[in-house]
Image (cartoon, rainbow, N blue to C red):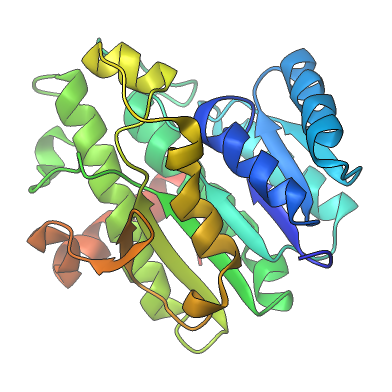
Amino acid sequence: MEDRIILITGATDGIGKQTARELAKSGATVLLHGRNASKGEQVRQEIIAASGNPNIDFFKADLASLQEVRQMAQAVQEKYDRLHVLINNAGVFEPTRRLSKDRFEMTFAVNHLAHFLLTCLLKDVLLKSAPARVINVASMAHSHELDFDNLQGEKSYSGYNAYAYSKLCNILFTFKLAKLWKNKNVTVNCLHPGVISTKLLHAGWGMGGESVEQGARTSVYLATSPEVASVTGAYYFDMQGPAKPAAIAYDEQVQNRLWELSERMCSCSF
């Protein structure tokens, strides 16, 4: 993995931080993302010390701002001309309805739109770096339906529904992009990391879960394993796959409608 460059969003805490730590041990150049610069530098130094790998970098962006996502994508490409793995890991759970800086519902904005835009902006460097991989961290808590008239809690809001919608969006995005890039030598897969003891789990469900080491396993597997080098458009759980998400995830009309809406909202085109 010494010649691989990997970007992980939400890499200063929880599953993302542990994923970064494991990938750093493999010798890869790991690009951390977080929204707090001082915490980012602290985690960067921690991972260097724990892994013995000096090739750890940090990029700051608040994913609640599409402008900051654009600035981060530009900063990454100014410094690196290759990107072999993009792990869209960051996520939030919002118990009450809040709006992002772009006036989108916060959960939808951070969990889906920010990663949709980031992947779009990094498409050229990913395609140039092929073979490359895009990995989206979804959840078994994804919704089994998608109400486009209440996609952002415009009519009624539930933190659980907003989170479930956003995680379904991650899977819909994965399946659509995998088809789009089928012959580009860039695989696109998603996963459920398990019920992991993170700040998000505590905030949303008020409970603990398994370790972050367990939570990082499938992301690391999809990023590194030769077993999945040619697998694309799949959903994994506990390093097992392809697993089956909700039936709606395979609905091409829903995939296309979300895709077109996301491109308009993000002002980007794949």
